[in-house]
Image (tube, rainbow, N blue to C red; front, side, top):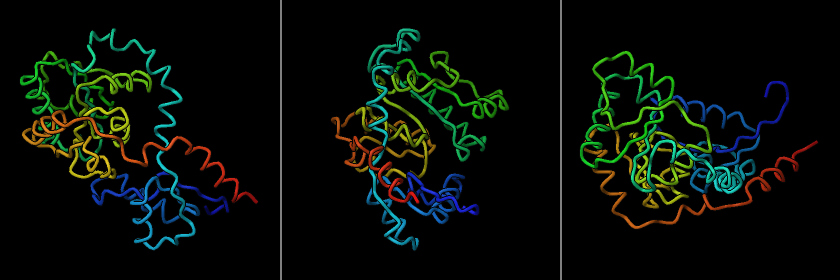
Length: 255
């Protein structure tokens, strides 16, 4: 920006209004310094307008995730991760947990481990936990945090493998923002392990439940989302020409 280079920000305007989330401050700073803002939804556009961003600098593009998934679906479907882990379609849980506000506080992290163990005891299904390196370090600091033997604690997976598991899971438990989007498109029930989300449209669509960290709430979330019929993803998640839009917008500002 200081060198005179234009800044285009995709995913502009996403807000969770939770200052414990490091990314929230980053979003506000980047949006305030961007020349052109490319929110995925009308909701995000209105967030920017309320913050004083001039409307002529804002272009709603839709979410690129469907285009990405469609492009790579042959490789995703080709993955043999299900066979490697001995899993059956619709008969396992998939979990991730990496956000600072969840794993940097030992009491909160302990509640998630307790919840995972209670879920395993109740559902008697395999559970796959793709563990971020930072999360693994925090877990190792407390020897009392033990998971059931039926919970597979694994290293982070590649894009193809992880999405193959997401697509075939009974339910996904995660604090990831992208997982909320991907699972909404896949029609897979999701429980978001956070107090807030930048993607409230997934809650409104009925594919996602915001649980917080209490084990009882997480269990209730699973019960709710897995009992609902499949819902269509939010409209802005189903746009299949986002890359074309973005290229045209960028080129239109070229000197």
